[in-house]
Image 1: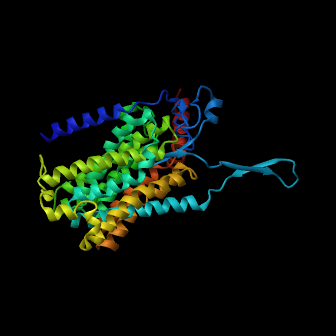
Image 2: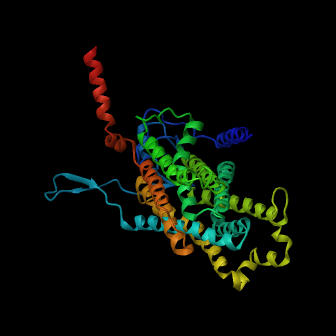
Image 3: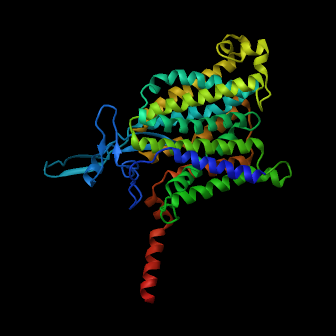
Length: 435
């Protein structure tokens, strides 16, 4: 029965992915350059105040806006690849790689630190409130804060943003449920399995043929590191006879990665069509999540269907577990502060900061900085709620973070590191000599 359920869920997942319309054209000759991931895969990019840019020639391609993507956030690349000036004799022009300013890197690292607080504070809120109530409070606040950006959402993205928002909601809802009884660090580490989900989406939906080991070694190495990391997190308790291979909380944490990874993938597909819509797409995702979590809270609060919470039937709980009563009860000040922090700061303001900084650094730099999020989640879990990490948890988390960093590397760098080009030349020379 479980296999049938998983098969149906997988089929529904692929069907939902197919709902998001693909770009008009995808360049298929060679994998895109690291600094130009979007322009190489689409024929049109659109600015809200300009005419659509049609890419028909190489010159059009070079003139098109370049896009940086990390964790499902995409913005137009504003970095300068080179700085050129005359030499001392004013005879020749000398070009050197431009240095990335420090502030966007610091801002992205700060964003990662702030994201890391969500997990410990999520557990703190779930200790005092039903998971549905805490999730709804957080995203209602975030949705209100980001509402002005929602009004700017391009009409042609509305259906795609709705589908993407449903997967975002899946990620946040399952994350909140997992945090009820699963350590914050474990939820964060397993959530980083998006590094496996995103290329899986690309393979299933786009039928990509350039994801073999030689074509995309970074994807395979990242997947191997991630799976070994999961093994470190899960196997010790099983071998010790203290639990199942995948507990309910861990399964929800993995499902969280499926939701977030799919939403990251769908966001990048939307950004291929509208590279100026980053914050509007984010606002749509948060608004959909707020709506779904509100429906969840309503059903759970009144015990409708499979939910048996019933907390909205109690006058006292209804007054303190909902907004604005949550902020008026002195006994829930810490919980209210956590809801405001995760909703207004780490969800709304943090996404604005991340979007601001992302255009000033390369995609690989941004991905590496944001890959530290699970590490910060472990730190704040220890500081705020006194969670202790076992050695196997540290090893597993480190491997999963290493997988995130590996996935951010470009293909050529990884091929040189693994010496795949040398082995290819050796195979070619060997074949030539035999013939």
